[in-house]
Length: 430
Image (cartoon, rainbow, N blue to C red; front, side, top):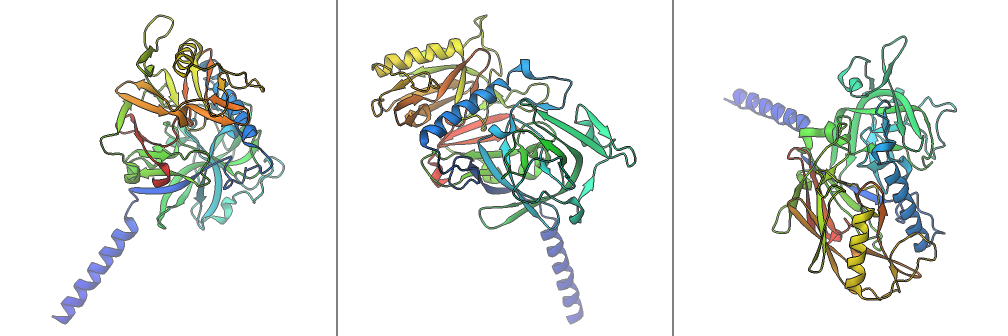
């Protein structure tokens, strides 16, 4: 009897250990650091709030320029956005043993990549040593005929070992070139747990140049394409992620949640369908109009109809960019509701400004298909030394729902259901 009991205990212990080892993460949360935060290594302690406001506007304009369909060359492996204009940073550890990297988190691109040794003179200056794949016991190069390699519209093959060689270009002519490989991704969750994902695909960049910051190691693509972090983790995170972006006045990290940690629920949650383009990278929503008080401004194209998927939701663009005709109608309604004389922006960056403290508390509702999202003054205007300015700008071609409008909202992307959900929140509590 004692022998049988011992045998059963050993078997049970073995099964329990095996299930523990093979258990897959369903949810975890990491910090999301704004580039202008004092927590960011990109932080410039000599910059003023006005400098940050101008920088945000210029970066938004630059990013919008490269979202335009006319700038995308379908014959290149190219992300139309500019890598160094991303707004948020995240930590990603790669390899065994794990090496921590600080990278731009970008919903406007797919590929995950970091700088790798050997680099010689072909990498941009980086404060910490690039990742050395030879020191990782779990690193493996992918072959040229592997399925992930086929996801790249253009790829090269190693002349001697048939490895998959990638080239990824950005809209400002920055680029990364190297080997498509797999290794273990590790995330330190804010609850003290560690989430590890073996055999994750990334670009090990041996030749990288352009507008990259020396304090960053690379970029994490959070887009909808097959090589993005979200698509790779897939069922392990239930195809979901969310974030809650803090107002800029709060010097803490925002949160980026994956899987079960990201699920939104409650009476305040509204959802709208995601539309994808051919590449599947960008998250398009359908904007039907906006309301200022009781006045509704319908959105329509030049033919008087509403195109499906007419606005990109993007965490990397600060300001909301609106097609010129719709922007003009919205601005006119705001002027009427505020009832004060605007002042010019002395730097010529923002279109609609008022004297500091003069703009009353107000709301504007953005009407997406199936989801009305109410923006407060916090999401609409930003304070500068010379006034209060509307955090929106016009563009000739496109619409982008920027991160300023998303502050103090939980925003969930559910790729399984193909929908984005919004819930107003105090992001210091989420």
